[in-house]
Image (cartoon, rainbow, N blue to C red; front, side):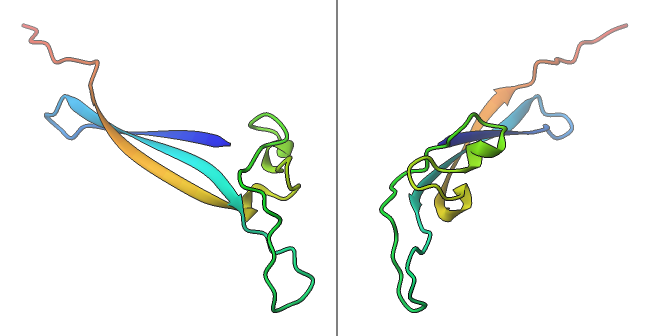
Length: 94
Protein backbone atom coordinates (compact mmCIF):
# COMPACT_ATOMS: atom_id res chain seq x y z
CA UNK A 1 0.00 0.00 0.00
CA UNK A 2 1.26 3.46 -0.80
CA UNK A 3 0.13 6.69 0.84
CA UNK A 4 1.12 10.18 -0.24
CA UNK A 5 1.12 13.16 2.13
CA UNK A 6 1.53 16.64 0.66
CA UNK A 7 2.66 19.42 3.00
CA UNK A 8 2.79 22.99 1.69
CA UNK A 9 5.08 25.48 3.39
CA UNK A 10 4.03 29.11 2.99
CA UNK A 11 6.66 31.45 1.59
CA UNK A 12 8.39 33.92 3.87
CA UNK A 13 7.57 37.61 3.56
CA UNK A 14 8.76 39.05 0.26
CA UNK A 15 9.26 35.71 -1.48
CA UNK A 16 7.01 34.50 -4.27
CA UNK A 17 7.97 30.82 -4.26
CA UNK A 18 6.90 28.16 -1.79
CA UNK A 19 8.19 24.68 -1.11
CA UNK A 20 5.92 21.66 -1.27
CA UNK A 21 7.12 18.56 0.56
CA UNK A 22 5.78 15.27 -0.79
CA UNK A 23 6.04 12.29 1.57
CA UNK A 24 5.50 8.82 0.13
CA UNK A 25 4.70 6.15 2.73
CA UNK A 26 4.78 2.44 1.91
CA UNK A 27 4.37 -0.57 4.19
CA UNK A 28 6.61 -3.53 3.44
CA UNK A 29 7.72 -6.67 5.26
CA UNK A 30 5.50 -7.98 8.09
CA UNK A 31 7.41 -7.93 11.39
CA UNK A 32 4.79 -9.55 13.65
CA UNK A 33 6.21 -12.31 15.86
CA UNK A 34 4.16 -15.48 15.32
CA UNK A 35 6.21 -17.69 17.63
CA UNK A 36 4.56 -19.39 20.61
CA UNK A 37 7.88 -19.51 22.50
CA UNK A 38 8.84 -16.33 24.40
CA UNK A 39 12.51 -16.29 23.30
CA UNK A 40 11.95 -17.22 19.64
CA UNK A 41 11.17 -14.92 16.73
CA UNK A 42 9.17 -16.25 13.77
CA UNK A 43 7.64 -14.22 10.96
CA UNK A 44 5.05 -15.43 8.47
CA UNK A 45 6.83 -14.36 5.29
CA UNK A 46 4.40 -11.63 4.19
CA UNK A 47 6.55 -9.35 2.03
CA UNK A 48 4.21 -6.42 1.37
CA UNK A 49 1.15 -4.93 3.05
CA UNK A 50 -2.00 -5.33 0.95
CA UNK A 51 -5.09 -3.55 2.35
CA UNK A 52 -8.33 -5.49 2.50
CA UNK A 53 -10.48 -2.43 1.75
CA UNK A 54 -10.44 1.09 0.37
CA UNK A 55 -8.56 3.89 2.16
CA UNK A 56 -10.62 5.52 4.88
CA UNK A 57 -12.43 2.47 6.26
CA UNK A 58 -11.31 0.18 9.11
CA UNK A 59 -10.73 -2.78 6.79
CA UNK A 60 -8.00 -0.83 4.98
CA UNK A 61 -5.73 -1.28 8.00
CA UNK A 62 -5.82 -5.10 7.83
CA UNK A 63 -3.51 -7.02 5.51
CA UNK A 64 -5.15 -9.48 3.12
CA UNK A 65 -2.07 -11.72 2.94
CA UNK A 66 -1.32 -12.24 6.64
CA UNK A 67 -4.39 -10.82 8.44
CA UNK A 68 -2.49 -8.52 10.79
CA UNK A 69 -2.72 -4.75 11.33
CA UNK A 70 -0.79 -2.29 9.16
CA UNK A 71 1.34 -1.28 12.18
CA UNK A 72 3.04 -4.70 12.15
CA UNK A 73 4.52 -3.97 8.72
CA UNK A 74 7.76 -2.05 8.20
CA UNK A 75 7.00 1.61 7.42
CA UNK A 76 9.19 3.10 4.71
CA UNK A 77 9.10 6.86 4.07
CA UNK A 78 10.64 8.81 1.23
CA UNK A 79 10.40 12.58 1.08
CA UNK A 80 11.01 14.98 -1.76
CA UNK A 81 10.79 18.76 -1.93
CA UNK A 82 9.32 20.55 -4.91
CA UNK A 83 9.64 24.29 -5.44
CA UNK A 84 6.41 25.82 -6.70
CA UNK A 85 5.58 29.34 -7.74
CA UNK A 86 2.93 31.18 -5.78
CA UNK A 87 -0.17 31.88 -7.89
CA UNK A 88 -0.78 35.27 -6.30
CA UNK A 89 1.40 37.99 -7.74
CA UNK A 90 1.83 41.45 -6.33
CA UNK A 91 0.50 44.24 -8.52
CA UNK A 92 1.02 47.96 -8.24
CA UNK A 93 -2.26 49.80 -7.87
CA UNK A 94 -2.45 53.59 -7.79
